[in-house]
Image (cartoon, rainbow, N blue to C red; front, side, top):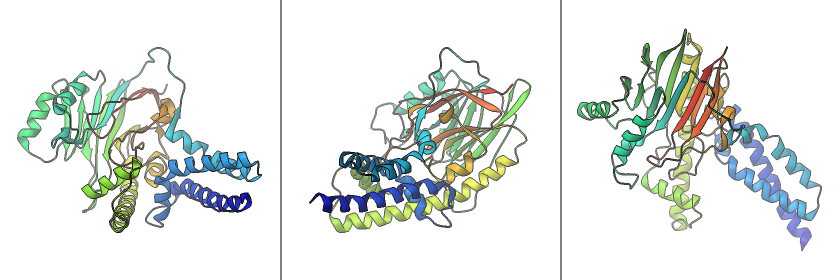
Length: 356
């Protein structure tokens, strides 16, 4: 009986190991070339947990196959560090040149998604109390209503400088020297704005991005909520249909974000100044999108983050999809993900210092 069980578990172990290896490959394979690997990248945390469970089984069985799984898990340690911060805790207040906050505020909870009272007022209060220099807001306003825009600007009264473009905004206590935005191809639901800031004798360019989301409908969101909470879904036919609809939406968004990331990277390459890139990538660290945007930049979370780095708290399983990246000539001296539930994202606060 144990021999039969060993054979079954061995087959499962091979599938799990190759799945994890496929997830490791997802950042280097463009979804527009082969989209399947991007789905494995999304499944990385579950594949990793599955391999750990299988590892425990083989340890209990005292089999040589234990080392095969150990090797597969071990080669992914650099990937693990993008999900779980291992930086040392800072002692004291390190000096810095720029303090910024990046936050997807979900349109100030205009439709009451948070199910909380006075969420809008709480957001204004939180943003005004931020003691830093610049805030980058994604999903800023639902539409271009001038009265609503004027009201929001008046409410964020502690920031004398601002730049608003579509659903993106930069509010600052420092003058914005130059500002602009990228124009993506028709059909893409993505945004990217930037502003230049003087830091002493130097200038930095700050980008804020919001890349394409999965555009999940109400049924797909409920389906994801049931999956992530371990509940049984709807009847089998409807569950299968929703699964295929969900998978299709994931693949389309993964492909579109790949194009958007490449376009943003080309613009960054042309920047005359060191760069800070922040915002909602709508993609995990094990993705082509993240690799494209981070391959020439440094991830603040890897530098100074500690613990689980998830930033999304909506229906989809919680992942790190919000980032602050910067040029290698800059340094992160502080990184905080604040556990504030006024949106379906957590805000990120980062302190950055210029290189000497």
